[in-house]
Image (tube, rainbow, N blue to C red; front, side, top):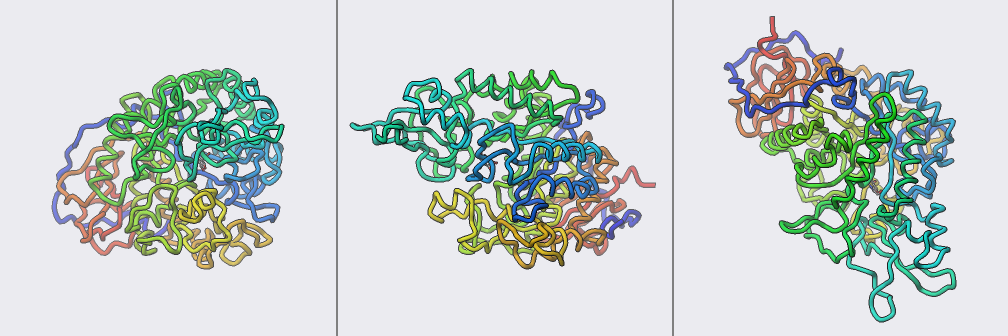
Length: 585
Ligand code: NOJ
């Protein structure tokens, strides 16, 4: 047991804290067990980004055998499931989110046999396994797109994608004004097989990621086959990429989003929804997929990556006949403010439970600045822009880490399901000082370096401080350079070390399971200053201090603390879990 888990230290309470239920909200409707083993309602799911987790063949890019060899570390951490970002055949122009074959493994990552071995090892360790599904677009190297390019305008092959004639007298202007998420126009003009400039195709992301036309029944049936392929191979579910983007408004009308719209989504105004996001037609697709998953035993799950606001709109993705979960990006985008945290927690629990779904919670992933840096940024940083050496408002590392530990302690006590991103359990910050020539995110190239993009959160993670590439790869190779000071974050430096971030996460996950916090009912604790988040759940009282002065703590054994405590006072940027008063003695 680590020192921060100082069970038995009863603090002297300065005053009795008033614990009233404000507001009286329900947590997730019931625990997994009560609902016939719907494990995902309360699960903690760990995102593995295969390129950067563990590299078995020494080429500098992580792979499936590498993941299999390190999977025990995740079981040891105490998570319930693993989500694998794409490992499919891909030219890797968008780190694998450009899929050239949905039912094979890219040689960079291994083989289908390696996948089966990973699946088997996960089962042995009691871990569920979710894979990524990328249905909005394929790679331009997919056989479907190659056939479409080779075929004539108006052909069945082209009808799988969003091909349109250009505008202007000679068709040399794009069909509309849409911009790519990664910067620049969302249309590219083809050179037709006869060498003449021809039709344009839509790509909401990189040029190498043509959007499929989801009104085409062939596209729908092909993806049902893809789902079945992986379900038959034993996956427990899918994380669905760009789940708000697959259907576009009829006529593809021009649209100019407000300047502050995030890159992956948003852009709504009071009276308009972007014609490429959150169109009603997407729900039909998920209803069909829901039925497919329901044919399989064992509670398979779909989680939507849908950057949709507000939460009440996002709740449509998790209606009972659609997906089971949706990432709660409203939570991820909430700053280090107790008022804002209380508000988003209330809204999330209330909104998701209104459709019978669990809320999810997430603080980091492969598309956002790691929360150990993000929570201490002092300048606006829209999602996807990333940070680099010349960014304004760069974080103070110690402050970022303190807030991240406290934020994670709050998140892991909330009812519902939580997502972790590899490396956050080590307290990894964003890698800010990556040399320009090492950057690989298409965002960096498509904005001529104006936006750094997402490489800083994708750097291979450190395992052993003294090993080449900190244990990521035996040869020392690493597709993005690892900052030298990452030796101090290495897993072996933290394992069993009292107060380390790794031990903090391990303790939190163990306590979360012991107290069944994923299925518990949350009630706010009153009587604190605006800058304090305080709630009771499953026999635990959680207090987090987002302010600038220490706050008094109520009586209770300290189960977990993100900072060393000196008496009954909680320092700024810290959080604590206490055994609730009425559970003591
Ligand atoms: C969302 C993924 O998380 C991101 O990494 C990717 O670039 C886009 N979708 C496009 O697939």
